[in-house]
Image 1: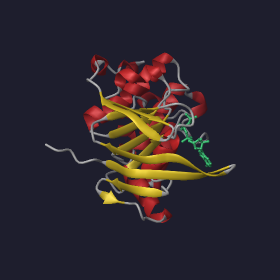
Image 2: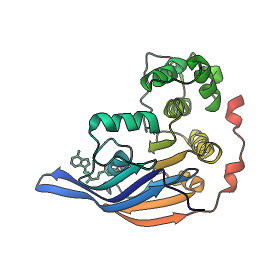
Image 3: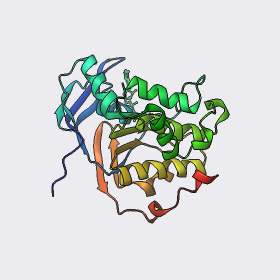
Image 4: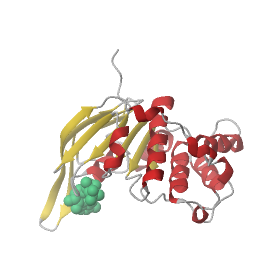
Length: 245
Ligand SMILES: Nc1ncnc2c1ncn2[C@@H]1O[C@H](COP(=O)(O)OP(=O)(O)OP(=O)(O)O)[C@@H](O)[C@H]1O
């Protein structure tokens, strides 16, 4: 059966201003992402990873090429229409979590629901569900400063999935974390892809993330130089024991 892409970029070119005139940062990049896959995007510094992630996430419009999200061609959309697509379809996870420091974990999640105009069942119940999903039920009243880096990143992932976004884009989600917390975050992203059929793309420099990849994409100097599917790692069966820590 042919799988339809959840995100499909075709022949994307991105020019950006440089000191000596416009610079081509992405050169006819085509990339399709599918539900149930955890894809890792790697490459040298300056190769265009973050630029590509921002195009796939409808944060930036490419100079040329097309982008479809869940079959909807969003290429010509204005900023408002792109914001709607982001709100409904895409969750972002950043290296430095980007949580609201004055709000508790629960309030951070509630705010994410409100920002998405959540119209599903009882939002408080949804917040509790998401807290459980990311293993933070016992930390609901904690503010980010009182949480470990791993807990903050799990909360950031909870925020990304709170309103049910089917596409998760993560920029260096483990690089600020120690090995144990990096592992927990990768297990969580894997679980979202495999058990919830999320479409997950993570930009990473971190070799510790590789065992979790269903697919590895490499970009160099603005062009994809490698795109290979991996066998499912045995690691994926490991238990989420941090729920009980
Ligand atoms: N707003 C901008 N204006 C001009 N040039 C930019 C802008 N943003 C990025 N660039 C340039 O585009 C190229 C790609 O940058 P990008 O951040 O996408 O690379 P990257 O692979 O994510 O790098 P890193 O791993 O260091 O984060 C770089 O040469 C960068 O200097």
